[in-house]
Length: 388
Image 1 (cartoon, rainbow, N blue to C red):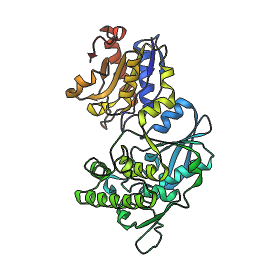
Image 2 (image 1 turned 135 degrees about the horizontal axis):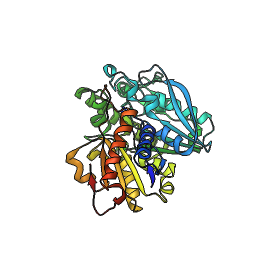
Image 3 (image 1 turned 90 degrees about the vertical axis):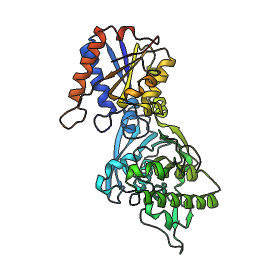
Image 4 (image 1 turned 180 degrees about the horizontal axis):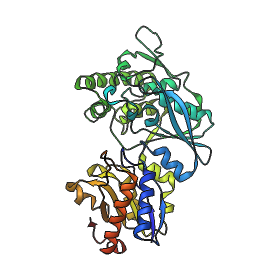
């Protein structure tokens, strides 16, 4: 049996590469003559650099940038094997995971470090840049990022705002100047990767949806909403672009809107971009079974997440799909059955209530052995789903 293993990460427990590795180990234990090809997945958030380096080769580089709270932060990015393509994660420079729970508040966080990391990649002469927007700690409209890339912002008195802009500074911005925007940005291919399609403003916007997840109170959300709206009135007046209603403008606390407005960038579904860059369709050829999954399968899995994209590609090719997970929402099983031929749920947790590689490998191996004895794996087909 030839198996293509293309999972997402099990959030806060195992990286996508670790999930792929332990799944391959489980197959070798349960089906000794199986051959596994591992292609870790991501959707534009944490793990995007790791996934694309694993698929395309290259090297991981680091640079010290301004962290989300304004303190120095070492951030990693990837230079792919072609030597011309950079992969930058906003999560690495301006990520929520970099901010202690007690200090999470988008009024006080900045995306400046992401811009500095992009500039560092440009210093390496790249011609193509993939920017993952998932996992940010910010709702600064991407202004901190654009500061680092050369855009100047001014207050009502005409004074330049030189400290790293945060969500709390949106109301201070009265004017801007793009004449010093890094000219290298005009000569490269910029691809934004995200798994959200929210607009900038309104009930589905950056402040309303993502602000509370990043520590904003209801009053903070209203303040941020007003600030984002004011800034984009200014942007439209200065640049002639109105991007507030575009799908994905609200990604990464409005960083999507900044990239659209200042750099005319377009958003792409993160999982689809990673699959394409990793050459997943080519690797699907001659495969008997595709395995994908994530820590928890639920209805949100269907909304642009990597397992759904992998499953749809596999089904289009007529290849059966097995999903592995740590938990599955029982109320979503019928919906998930439209994607996966079978779901193997293995709640393998350690003493800290997190998935561990050792626990997961054993649980997966036991589950696969059970499936094999039941005759499920050899007879997987689209005639009907079988669930653990």
